[in-house]
View 1: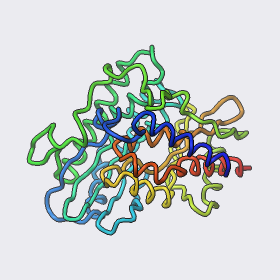
View 2: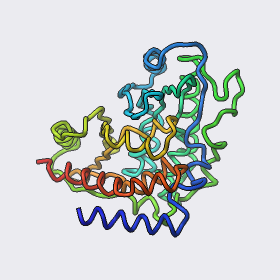
View 3: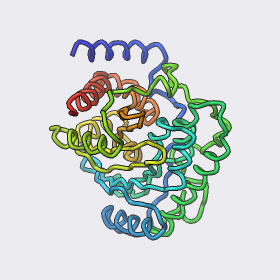
Length: 328
């Protein structure tokens, strides 16, 4: 508890000193992290989500989960689809290793904000530049091509599965979430947060588990399932890369995040994910430092909204650590 409050106080000082981890236009915002495609017709969020899942399967994209997001606002509704695009996943894991695990899944959300209905796409080009770009100096052409192709497949998915295009009415390039996405070359080699923290420093090793990758995934998933707040949603295991991803629903942090950001288009920032990395006869369990993660996904929230929830990142980090510590 003392450590959580200490981290919260440090964060307050940093917010005041640098103008706010989420105040103003953050780096993720400039990269077009969330891309909007307005929805035609009057189908419900559930109906559109089901159509997209069916279309994704037909396109060869694996549907890991379709899950509602807890917003705490009766005017908002969102269902997130988490997808596995094998070509993209293999590219980010080959280039980024464990770092790439945090960009290995593709995500989009079918959203309703009152009468406004749209699809919010989490831009894989932006994610790759954050999580794979931290490796500076490596060959970047494969991940540039792979992330662009993944984005093209997502745009094809929303058009075929929901009749939606960016900007609506065929205006390709309009309606982007915050700004035009930039090419990866412009942000390579690494993303640096407002705190001056780079990706390798933001990775937190929560512990390691003896055994193979699949065993570790099952053990962590069981522990999460026994927790009173977290629900394991999906597992993605890449044996060749030695990396696995576990998606987790945590209703309280989802609700709190929307109290901070106040924008339903940020729904694809969830679910939270644990990344497991094989090292010899043990498996490392990694998460992102929550302050850094919020910097990436919620960079455009107000300073005041963030400061009123200043203890949340530390509390969530503590719960992540407790989950791993409780895993036999």
